[in-house]
Length: 541
Ligand SMILES: Nc1ncnc2c1ncn2[C@@H]1O[C@H](COP(=O)(O)OP(=O)(O)O)[C@@H](O)[C@H]1O
Ligand SMILES: O=C(CO)[C@@H](O)[C@@H](O)COP(=O)(O)O
Image (cartoon, rainbow, N blue to C red; front, side, top):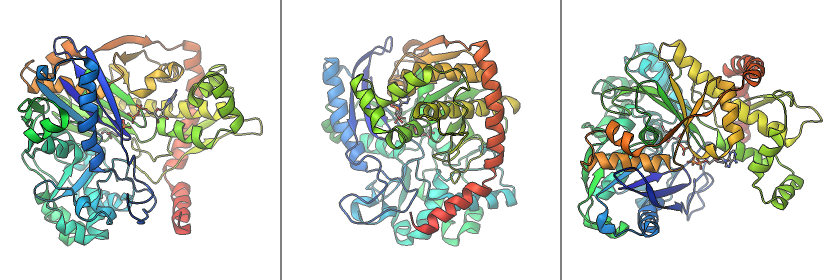
């Protein structure tokens, strides 16, 4: 099987053995255009604050380069490959023509013609209006999203296109998640997966928000859902077969099974063999997503959503998230560390992350005297407000970079605890916390999470979680296993109790967490942080 994971900065492919999930070869392709935040490629067109776009060329390059390279690295005959599965970030969406041609190919100088990356946060005003109207009208779908939808989601992003570039909106014949667009390119068949549609696409109980509701937002928005697919495809299903053109790109046999599209977070549950009710998988990378199957339906404040069949068929799938985690550490490493630290790290042959971690790990809990809010990229759960920003409290003239670095790691752990507690308070038990993603390599960070959460952490056994999960879904789509649970049991990998909480540190963290909660409630109403953002925007940054 081949699994392909389309991330924020790169795409990676992995070749996986069907019988036991062994990863035989892998390759990564860094996107040439990365995240497009400043100006449109090949033009002088500048982007406003909070914009984040991607290029479809970069995604196709992953198929052209990472897939054949992974097969070569595995040293297998490509003719042995029987299926391909993919996952994408979400909600990464694009306007396209009826044949799937992205509009940015026709008008590369129009910002709204480009795919909007999940972390495009410039549609907050549109999300606010959607939320206010939905609350006022008592829209039945709103509680399924914890009472607020995010500016990252398709209705907010599409309304922004309509109001800021109606001409691009009018030319949009299909509005599609990149997760489904890539499947279209691979199979020639347009499908819509139940996962992206259900969560960030706001599809509940067989329908999208009503025409009437959309018309009340803007008269020309009434017909928006005609640009979406209404037939949804189940996870682990067969989307179609690899076309000759896609076989040419990838070097894989024409006609192999291609699984229905999926999301990087949700597909990782299969890779961690954590698809039973109460197993919360936290995919910790640039951001963290928390996904959990459950047999009960509840309204959890601030969750991203609950979707029937959204992780595995037959169960409710919950999602919550933190919009910035590794990204916050990266910001600090890039902008908060003096040259002397960079030099010292270099001399020791360490990354700046590893160097700061080593220094921070030598401290006792609370020794830095700091507490921080992890909102540098806004707050996805539980406040659902991307106009909030980061806060660091307690700095003195003796504060050092490692102190701040540690406080930022702790802030993200406190944010995770807030999410877990919110689920449990709403009557959805979290039986096991399973960590996955790029941050697993930082053992100090993982131990902080175990101490702050006061519970054992399990960890996924693969550092290619999403790509492995995609390969597992492909195995089901190809008919090698009856369902995702069986395929996950055979091919997924998880180490239980990898980190155990330390009682004394956990007690010390309880005190800091209480301060975090006070800070959270104080700044969470947005009075000060929204004003600061408004002043920033008026000043034209
Ligand atoms: N040693 C480290 N400790 C903490 N964070 C790290 C470390 N090394 C890299 N990071 C952060 O990890 C993030 C990348 O995580 P990864 O899972 O690879 O990416 P993605 O979320 O795009 O899949 C970056 O934001 C980076 O700042
Ligand atoms: O929002 C989701 C999933 O719902 C993610 O795709 C998004 O946070 C991006 O994840 P990464 O930080 O690229 O792992």
